[in-house]
Image (cartoon, rainbow, N blue to C red; front, top):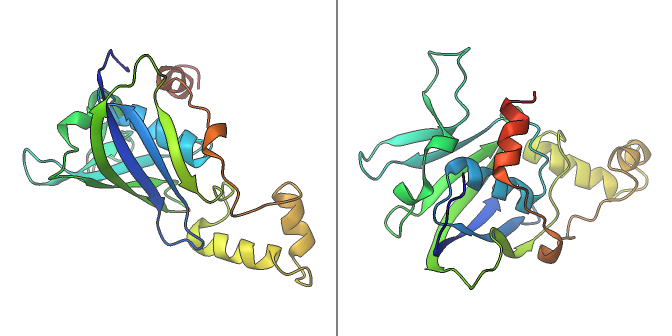
Length: 201
């Protein structure tokens, strides 16, 4: 899926509607598909890729908004979704078409703002994707989206709350919303993720 490349795209990915802010700055090969970008965002943010996702972006060739992700054959009357592994990011992102929404987990509704920032030469034989910078820990999976996350942080910060101990146990004993180290981000091969999702399920 990721082919030979000599250019990299830089993106800033910020989770919407959360406080304190949570964002990442990543670089990916310009030859990436939207599936490859999805995997890079998941890994950089700290999500576990348990749920469906979709990019919503304007197609610069037509001027219309498109949804790119995993098509659902069980709901043919829904808005058509292009298969992300068949669509190249280079055909969509540019200085004139720099923004996209990326939603993860349609139940919790985690919406990320994805902003294309730059294109630059590949640095030597370095590994990509890369996470250059970021702020904030990823919310726990299945915590209820932005409202549920805000409630979780409120309960965790108040030892007198009736739910404090149970919530603390649920998050594994501790949770620091400010904790993030870009050097600890590990990117998985998107081809392996695809095989697990579609061939080994």
